[in-house]
Amino acid sequence: MLPDIERKLLRILFNFFRQKLRMPTMPELEVKTGRSVEDIRTGLLALEKGNYITWEDKSDTLNIVIIEGWDRDPKISTPTTPPGAVNRYYTEY
Image 1: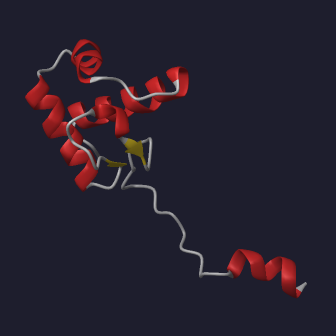
Image 2: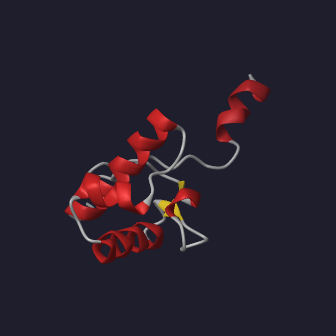
Image 3: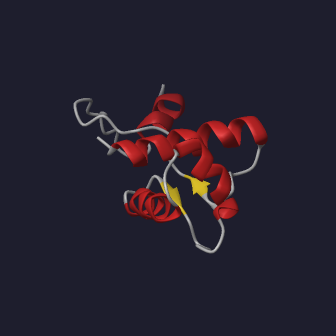
């Protein structure tokens, strides 16, 4: 479960990109979160460390790429499917 600022940032990034087809700027994130640049930067770095986003050029937020746009729920376990098992159905039956 993500902390509040990280969850909020992830939802803002996801929804903002879906509506405007670009990532928000740092001033836009400040307005939308009500947090300081340092808090936002710390939250974004934590999201990157958790593999929710990639952020190669940290001088600008416009090149953030979302890997996973929602919080992972530790209570829900996803079943692991062996590689190729999905395709095997169509090729063997």
